[in-house]
Length: 54
Image (cartoon, rainbow, N blue to C red; front, side):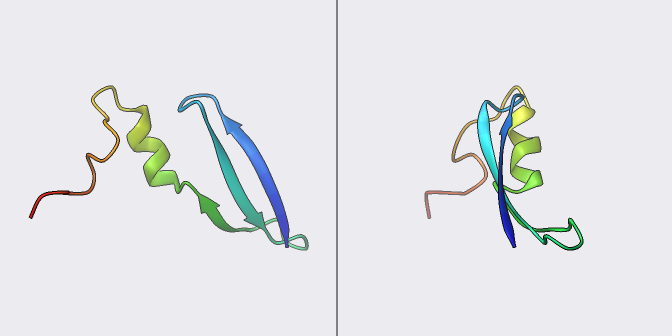
């Protein structure tokens, strides 16, 4: 396994990937692709995905 750290220019944050050295397959990525896509939206607000009130 190998850790790859990349800067995501669109969201102005870092992306951490665990990559299989033999195959190049991404095993895990933080934040996930879905979260990065949400951050690209103009109306995105942190915490908007999770309801904080019961």
